[in-house]
Figure 1 (spheres, helix red, strand yellow):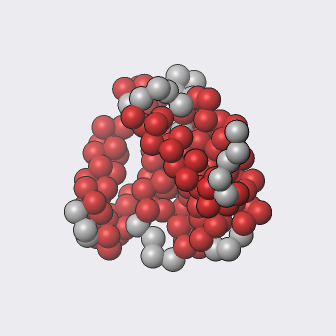
Figure 2 (cartoon, rainbow, N blue to C red):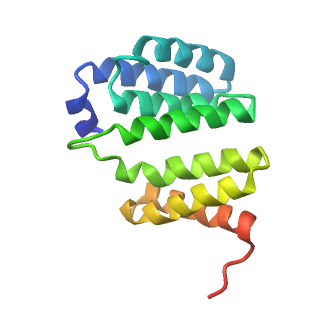
Length: 154
């Protein structure tokens, strides 16, 4: 996160606002969280740092009621991650972002697209650390694999 702030001069203010909206969402106020995140998106959409756009789109996806809208925001997060360069490489974000897109496709009944994104999540999972975040993402990849492909045989 410190590296992200170094790449984003106004990072503290934007990340704080994102965090406040996320707390609202986790507290049960999905609509207010969505409204605040959408307002922030309008402010940074064109000129905002890719890290901010990635994080914001990722959290906006979580506040959507419609699965198609959720997928659209997940795709925006993935596109913003592709624009990240320098010290904050997107490699550690990619498995989770691809997984979210895969889940979105699955919700819409698009199993082949979901399988393609799941394969990308698996391919990029090597960038995950051996930490609780990496463990959660790897477990989610396995769960979605079981849903799409059934039990994995050794």
